Image 1 (tube, rainbow, N blue to C red):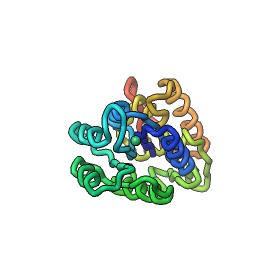
Image 2 (image 1 turned 45 degrees about the vertical axis):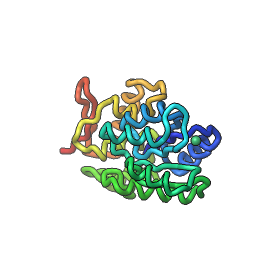
Image 3 (image 1 turned 135 degrees about the vertical axis):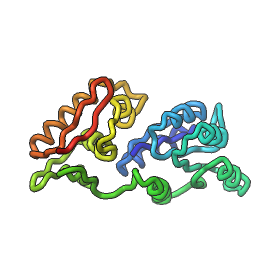
Image 4 (image 1 turned 60 degrees about the horizontal axis):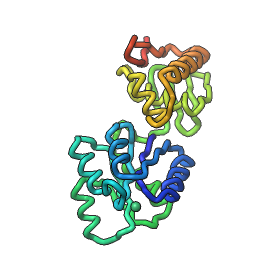
Length: 224
Ligand code: CA
């Protein structure tokens, strides 16, 4: 799962990023409201952590514009100001939850879990199934009958996306954004490399599931 942190206090932002990454999330940081809005609008994030007092655009404006653009990504507002006025304003512009700084790491993680639980397709179930395959999230392991293989982090992320989308085609661009993030300089080529790793692993597991290439578009899973 990919989290966007919009926070201008550089040290806090990097502490949050470390905390999230330690807990299995991928986290990107924007240090001002404009960059944050741009990134959030990409639609690749599962949750946005949004500070209120930000340079260029404040958090409320970012949130209002995000919602006005039809983006429904869950937003958790972070604020140093605990006044009721701020809370009401934030909820009015479509914030999903509020956390007052300073907060406990545990509290933040619980909020993120609660927010992502509300989107059924992102529900943190322990295993995903498709055809004869089972993907176990805690152990990054792919099972097929009696065979199993541990996947690398990127292979796991990619397999998870493919299994969530099932027979729907997922574009190369989307895979690239969701897995490498859009500030990275990874290219289409990376996607192809990991798809070929996964195909080898499916073969090794004797799975009947195939990763089908849709020319010029992307990939989807296929079972007999
Ligand atoms: Ca701030």
